[in-house]
Amino acid sequence: MDRIPGLTRDYTASLDTLGIALGSAAAKVLGRVVRELLTANVLPMPDDVEALLPRIVEGLAGRRVVSAYARRAKGRRLWLWYLPHGQVIELLLVTNSPPQALD
Image (cartoon, rainbow, N blue to C red):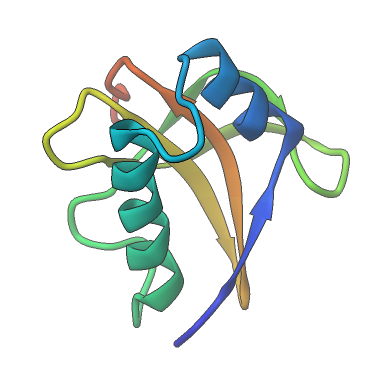
């Protein structure tokens, strides 16, 4: 199932904060993670963790988001935080600290 990515302001700001430039090795690894999410048959995928976000994020609809799914970028200390909404995947944040799974 192909989906559409929705980028929040917090997502793009987190890339800047972490120094992830367009075309860099880290950006390419994150691009692979995004493609995995966009083409997955079912979300969340088995290795994804549901957790509280490290900070409150403003979602695409202007609402406050406090928890989401996190997926680690293979071989990197980067986690991409997202929420699936049918055909749209809301990309919320990228962090360099691991999520603390909800019980």
